[in-house]
Image (cartoon, rainbow, N blue to C red; front, side, top):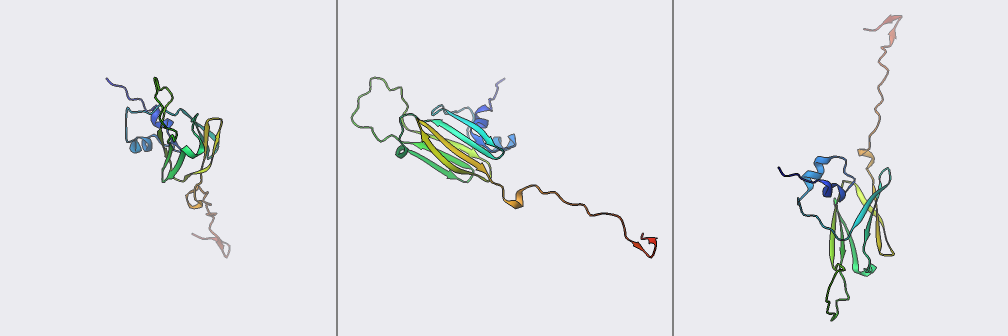
Length: 149
């Protein structure tokens, strides 16, 4: 019997609260990207940070694109030149995709010492936020000293 590892799905999705949404939106099973390595951390109730190790890339060589329910980080090296490599162990161009839940948006990006940090926040519209419904007092008013039926 073959075991299916869902860990890669949960590592690349931000703001999802239900496993079934992850499974519905997953387009590839078994294929996981390994470069660049990244961390996802929760920095607040509805705030997240993705940190990617992109050593050797300049800000001009990196591109961050936010689409509905998807974040795409691209790295394209510009210094290809006429180099002859005997061994190439440093990865080149990459594209990393992250699935985002509804109402998650990018608020900031920062490149410092080869670490690209992308801050995200989940902002639910007021109409989508949970609200408390008041139950009116169910005591019937009295009419002329009698209890109303």
